[in-house]
Length: 259
Image (cartoon, rainbow, N blue to C red; front, side, top):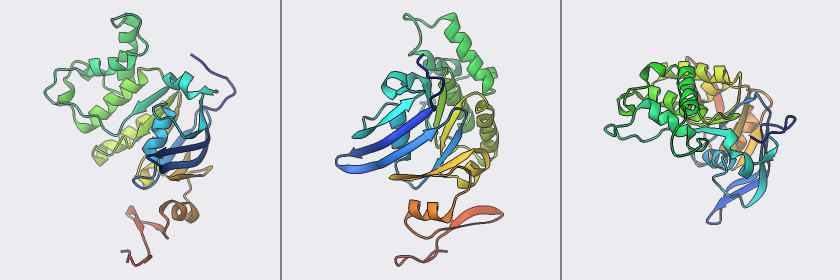
């Protein structure tokens, strides 16, 4: 495992990414220190998933550099765990929860078979997310929230230093979201977390720092979202208000009447 003790967990410098000539990310500069918990918000198509995939080493940028624990992402991508928005599971495919989590050991196992250590690490990951009692359950029998916990356990089984999550609560019920965010807060005690979400109110309640992404990145050193950040992100005036349920109100702009 490659690691530089003084280096940030993630460092992105002058990153440009485009697809078929269309820019997706422009001049992204981001430093995420160890132990940080960064929330990234932004509109659909703003490049949030592209940024995460770049940090995972799955996308080759047009230019720029990404460092993980002080080393190029190509050398250190194994230190980054990933939880997708949702994973498609055939309800009738015969795979158990424990086997799904063991998949996180594929890149680390030695030989053709999982070792006792692999199975121990997978069980410890299930224990951390409160799912060890469902280890033998078929994955298709779980609720959406339970499946997300299993995906977190699979990511933890890779023994990451950094955990990336892409809209992890988008497909779960509101009651489960609170316990899920509490789980992430516990995990943040031992690892760096980057969370992408549309839920501004929930993200700002749990993360340590916020960033807004819409092709370009606008960072804050706190969880405060300034009107300037939001207007730069959405390219229109936006008021954030709350009376019971936080939501956005867009004043009239460019011929559109907000309500």
